[in-house]
Image (cartoon, rainbow, N blue to C red; front, side):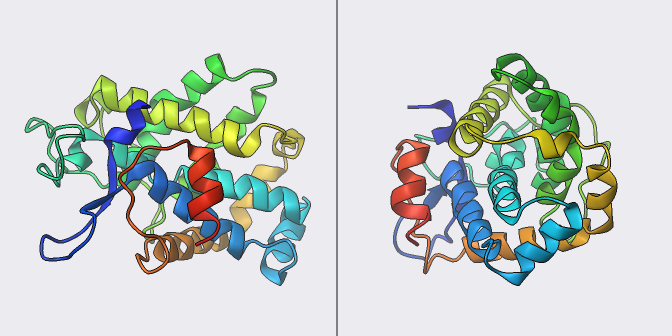
Length: 241
């Protein structure tokens, strides 16, 4: 069982019936699945955004679905996990020295900048120059609660234990394998892409907000606490929902 299955992403109120929590990797994939639906290449929204970026609609769908899978990496923070300290002994335990004083959107951006990007550059095979162009995309999807994440909030160690950093890194590596194993990164390397993205970044932020809202609906995405391969959950649970 991977380390990232020790983290909850959604939790029910005590009075609600059913599974008490939904594993964080699954919630991330639920939201990615909603992004795949919203950015259907046959739909006007995807075609218009792709045109403004000068990329193909299918390329945009595939890439932004990957980005959405990272939208809640800030929930790997021990400070966030401590908000529900008694959900299960199977989950990481709260650390009283790490209070939840910064939102998980900001914590996710902090972790990408300070940890995950560097680890991917070491561990990812092949051309890794695309990682240098990821920051604005990560800023968009981590800022899925109506505002961009803060750029400076302190040290990663103030919010994450080493175990949390490892779990988030492993999850990111596995999402790269799941969504980008045969991906054409070359459009990301176009130096004008960043300028074009900036002009429509709030539209992508709106897609991220809507995908997160829909992907949090328990009517469609039942809480699951059983570890399984990300590819299995994606194919058998997230997409069919």
